Image (cartoon, rainbow, N blue to C red; front, side, top):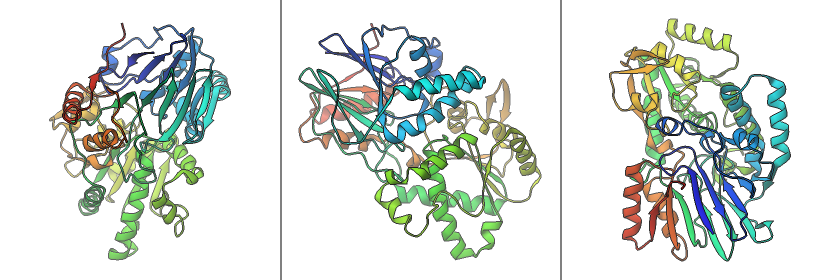
Length: 449
């Protein structure tokens, strides 16, 4: 058995891990796109490794840094089964259609042909049940708590148990079940995005979000929240619903009419619809909310922007309006999408607020803005930053250092070896030292030979 990393070994994006079995057959876990600095280190997106013995692809979740190179993999000749959770199978075509339009073509006939082929290869599985996929290999999915449908994979093959964490979520995330440690692992391939940091608690992050929203009401400015279309947007809507409910009781119904909440992302709107259709997969807390609010992702002062003309007119309206507004738009790292247009318009406004609620990759405009610079380059032009910048780490979809340590130490018996992936150099080094202090054998993922 051999483990080969084709991505995610020297950065946070581009996750792609190949497990070679004693038989010579191979399995691939994720096939993601490189972003930010990682993309500059890995400019060639073509599949440059042999796939003639590749028997199956295992997808942990649908974020683009885990699935974005799927078109290249299929173009290279992969036509085997793609195993994933049932929610992932529902949402993957939406994510891939958007990715193809950005990176490949707008020709709908070609997009439809790709999606038809993709759907024919999908093999959705339930959580917690072993599934034989080869004569000498079985897999089991477990909830990862990262986004709806995310999972970590247990692979039983050649007398060994290999666990691929994918992206693990933090406990107590809205809508999602907490990840539970695996029962054992000879090899644990573990993400390390926040291996050197601990997040704020959920109570503290809600307080911070409410404070920023109240500030928006007071200064009648625009608050821009760059957020991924899947996961973060829905969690924000869920928690904003609760905040506005509290404001309604303390300030009366007028507060709901004095602020616009705008989701400017057609993809986020489509994902939100699918999220509501997938309510059986929500966690116990959300199931309790559904007993008195059957649409917790929708509220009175929420507007969804779909087409481009409406997007442009919304920008003009907000610039002239005296009413406060909260805008949620992608992309989450400000590398493209409609949020860039909002940043161009409002970064120089002193009464504007930029609120980061997710990881900002090295080399992305989001990281540059978050780091306190005086200006940022967007689409080749420099824009001064006069808006107030806020960050709430508690909304991260990634487990923090303590969560990662708990995931490892929560196993009934220590893993034989932990291989750290999906992290920048410092977080990986810090997490490795922390785990080694617990007597865990740890190494950093090697680049492919």
